Length: 117
Image 1 (tube, one colour):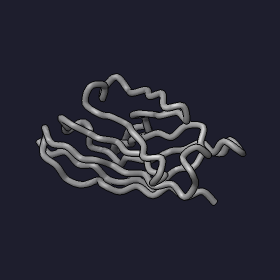
Image 2: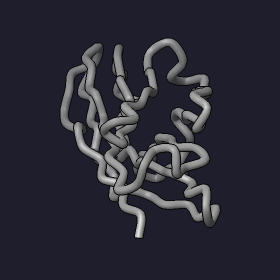
Image 3: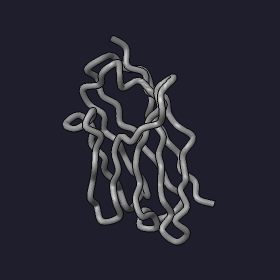
Image 4: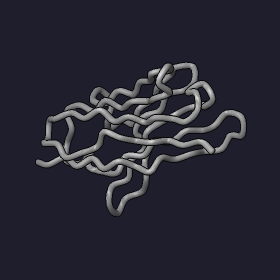
């Protein structure tokens, strides 16, 4: 069973930064892609950023230039560096990964990010 464990969320003032981590129980290269999604209260879950096994990245327009997705292959970990945070970035952030062998999608448990104005 693939496991994804997020960490790094918290409370930060507007303009601040947080680095979110997603540690996978399998090699990163076992996944077709890995990404971060977020869900704010009363809203649908939305894509924030994704990185493919080849290293290509894609971002939601709302976070371009402020957030950066990266990975550490040796640690089987994907990161989301969030800078210049805004109150509207407040949400539960989830790690998502598509396991290549079965094309099964896995989700982490989520980590809360709260940005105060």
